[in-house]
Image 1 (cartoon, rainbow, N blue to C red):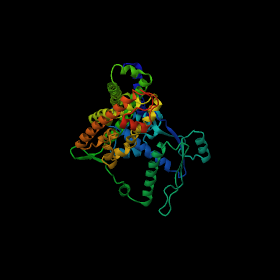
Image 2: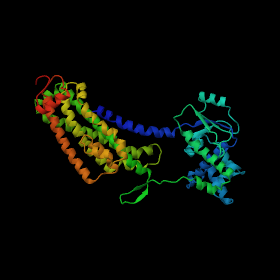
Image 3: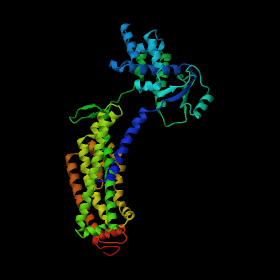
Image 4: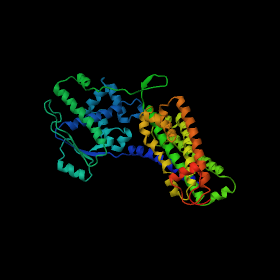
Length: 485
């Protein structure tokens, strides 16, 4: 622990975790605008889509409550509107886009439409002009051959072709609007354009059917299914992002728990094999017996493991508190609550110690029977394979913490630490915590007896490592296999 190499290697995992958190955020902040072309054979749909999208962006910009958050042209426009006739903000924006008046309206619209994508992104990252760029005159068609050539040459990201009659008739389905792109994995443009197109075409169908707008909104309204959660007092309230983070938070802790136990037990296994193959264990045996050596190794590396997991947990807390500030983002209360939740942190430390001691005792005993790391890894496969089942069951248990799978695996000692950590979002009854803790204490004691028996035999023998049946015979009879003592 006092060496530089240890701390350099220890910093690797938190660094990877921080990078994995920062890369998606940085990627979202630096996403390039996507150029696209549209062939509007209807002659009116694209113009309506652009106007509708502009109206939504202007609504967000002009509805900001704090005056300091508004750019100067927007403030002048609002002051001019305040001095004029009354009207809703939505109606005024519609009139502004349809026929801007001379003066503040025309000045504002000229300024707003002249903003570069980077400037628009600083003003409003969700604005469509900050994310996408229409690279041709909306009033003319782009010949299909030209559009396809631009796609092939990567001069545009996508080409959209709107049919002559996207509205259709009740007795005939409308023609499809076509979206052509060489990159089908980036869905941003599709997911923005499709709702805009639906709204514009739907409004036209309403007008052609002569349905009043109020009635149309009622007919087209989706039925809202409000997500609610139940608090500790039994009252139901609307669920927030924070609640979802806390529900899925144990999955992240289980993953870190799995990594920490895997890393530290591998360290113990390697140390045991190296000391035996290098005959260091013979020097230690001259001063004390096999069991104190095993106990010292297990407890010493357990302390190293606590340094490792303590560093990881500290990094998690610091990242939750400091990363939003570093990137200039508002602090996410859900991440802070997740990283500082006492139930999660306490459960993690307890189950780390119980899980580590269980696997460490067995692997230390098996490692003492081997003279090479390859032999030890082969012999330890049955024990280490048990570590993968709770990893595979993380998501199913998180989705149903009280289901049959979770309940059964809770009472199987090789899986208990991981499963109980996974169930922390909806904690089981206190009796389950007490029962599983007692079960793990007994399991650790049994593993220590088995590991000590193997270690006492293994450090005093040499030669080829026994097979798995040979290990079972050693446990039953205690007779050494391989070379002599």
